[in-house]
Length: 267
Image (cartoon, rainbow, N blue to C red):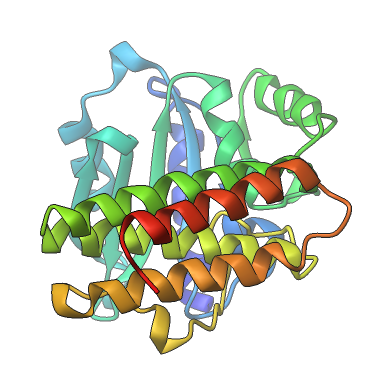
């Protein structure tokens, strides 16, 4: 963790100096909560001035920042994920990961900031030149987030859609699509279990999830019928756990699953 703290310190100083491109920066994820470990990634959201940013120039400047530090901090590799506006930096032989999200609007901060469950803004705000970031984060912290019943409803409807899509891929003998969509279905099921267990903190990607091997996806279409049946039965078992919430939706979900089993002649 000492190495990550050095990286955060160097980057914070760099952000303070870079007045031309950077308006602000916040530390999110485990380090933003003060719970970072030696195995944790560093996640930082930046508010940048769009027309002042050349990503290649910015990347090179960040690389140069670490070139004269100890070997474990030197940036050995970079990956620019344009669709996510994310620059991934890999430091030293251990490839310590720093993810820089380069945003142009404050609203782009919301998703990962809220999912990080940050409450102490003094610790997570690294740079805020015009006090805009603090004001925005204080505001969104007052908004309702992850209403449990709404999330259960959303997950049920998504699982139904994905189960039918998985089934359709099987009927078309599309092995890869079956494998791909059934994994999406499994992820939604894992999220549903997490919420029904009374947890909400990391429902977008539940940590330490234990998945029965019967639910593991396959590209072997000879085993696809059993796999789909296992997914549906697991879903039905979760519906049994839902009490006094969305009774009508739960019944509709059960009926949908039964019709899906009949259509595909899965006994």
